[in-house]
Length: 355
Image (cartoon, one colour):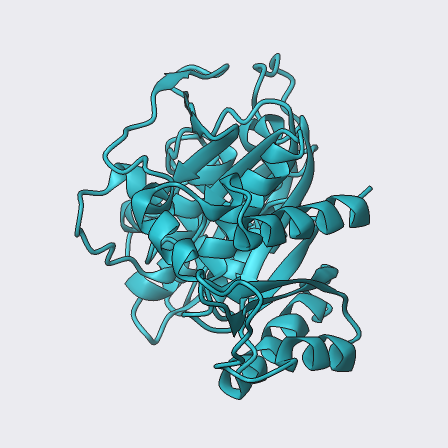
């Protein structure tokens, strides 16, 4: 392996907040030492620590492991450099775009199929209905559903030049008083996003860090279901304040809720759980709004919230209109039916909890 081989491997590591340029191109590779049995790469960071430093170091390690022979060990070190040149405005692009966002809240679930995205979209609309400035980032990169649920499928967000040369800021779409951003706006209909973890994390950060959000009271992040590297990457690199967990009352869903809560409570993540939302809590026929049928079990979410020591923020009924509204791109939270008002009540409780 030559230094050029190592540099070629490191070109796979892109900096999400610097126009997605690779770390070789932006001059972060400070030194490369090669011996018969080991390769040591030193990355240079400015005195003001890059908020994506851990992600970049980890990605560089992964790139070396992929390209080096198994008999050769690798190490990634860091060095602090004192850059005396005038710094361009917007060097820390990602955090700069989040500077006017008051609360960043993750909407998560222990498993798929519990209506997490439905809750996220309707919660965003309900918060906007209460007068708050709201944005929603669709971080479910493998199943982006926000474009369909908001009636914005086929729309392509505009872009404008950023503060640094070669940078672009993505302008979120606005509808229902909410700013929307999703990887689904950049993929063809039906296109499968066949991405490994680091690539998905990279694209996701771009969907959040390079978006011109402007002043917001709430930025909701619709996270992928389960627990994994995307979740860890999000909470480490995005100043997420905490999370709301969505579940259904059935036992198989509740078993995964505990895993999701424990992930956020892990010492390496350490984010508060603002509360639990019990979705599909009961079925109510639209013709008989006073009737309740507990198809997936009764009070499962309330019992789990009590057991885990978190608040039950809301209980959303299973109503045919919620599905129809989502498919039609008109979220139920915009209306005054019982399902829409349940989301407004949920929004009020979350806003009150966060002050």
